[in-house]
Amino acid sequence: MKPWQKDLLLTMAAMAILSAAIWILKGLGAP
Image 1 (tube, helix red, strand yellow):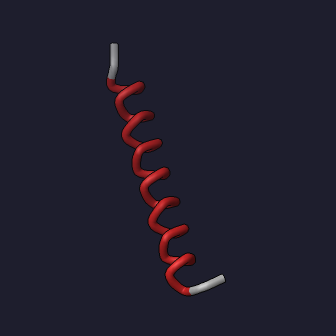
Image 2: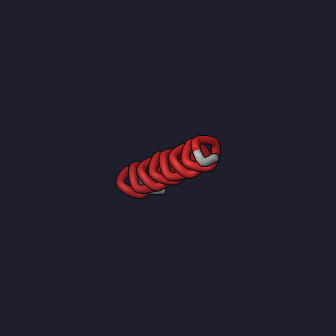
């Protein structure tokens, strides 16, 4: 695996975790 591919995977994983966290927070914040 090339270094830039590793960075891309890490970036995608971070974005996925962030979006999931926002989605969960929105779900919990909704009445």
